[in-house]
Image (cartoon, rainbow, N blue to C red; front, side, top):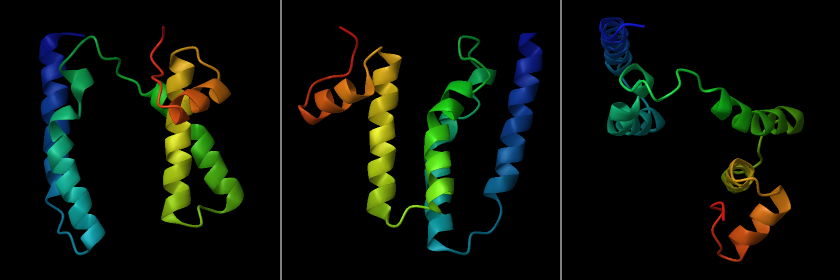
Length: 119
């Protein structure tokens, strides 16, 4: 794909994001999301600026799938604590997987304060 095409796609994505961010916010959660989106905006659409970044997020989707399935099967998390604990556990397991560390060992290392970086 040509650089000019990528620039065009990036400009279009930014315009669409501007439209979304212009929607009036009526709740505290909406204001928090708006502030977070504005803080992270520079990280969006990276794949349209940097050819080394893949244009898909299949890895992210695969990492999130177990959490989505768990939530659907159990009819949701019962508290913010359980959702955060589940997310943290999945993060540790996913990081371990990326470094060829089995899930149990990744959890054990994390609890012991050790790194999950490949040796």
